[in-house]
Length: 160
Image 1 (cartoon, helix red, strand yellow):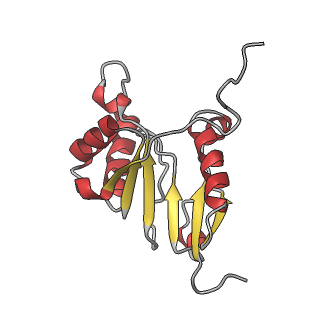
Image 2 (cartoon, helix red, strand yellow):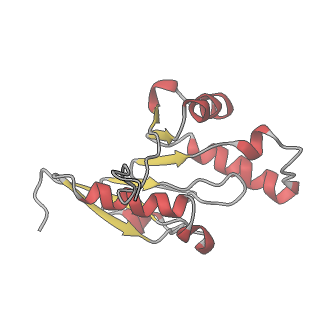
Image 3 (spheres, helix red, strand yellow):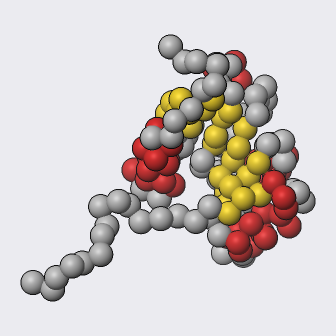
C-alpha cells in the first residue's frame, strides 16, 4: 500500500522496441533503477500508450524518450508530465535528415504536444538552449541533467 506522502510516477518505456536495448532505452532502465531507491517515490516502468486513462493512477508521467519524427507522446494527457529531450540534431541539421511530408506532420504534432509538458529534461546545456529556441518553451522549466556512467564503471586501482 502507498501512503499519502508517496508520489506515484510512471516512467514510460520507449515505444520503439529497438530503442529499448540501446541509447535512450539504456537511460530509461538506469533512471528507473536510480529512482526506485528514493524514499517517497513509487515508480513503475510502464508500456507506452496513446490512451490517457492508462496513466490515471499516477501523479506524474515521465516520457524519457522523445523522437522528432515519430509520435512518442500521447495526443491527450490528463496528468502532469515531463519529457526528456536528448537533442534536436535532426531539426538543427535538416539537410542531413530529410523528414518528408509525414515527418513534417509528426514533427508539428510532437512540437505542439511537448509544449504542454510540466517540465522538460535535457542532457546538456546545448540541448537546453535548442529546446528553448525550437519550442519557445520557458527556460526556467527546462532542466539539464547530465548523463552518468553506469555504476559498474569504477576507477582502476592497479595496472596489473
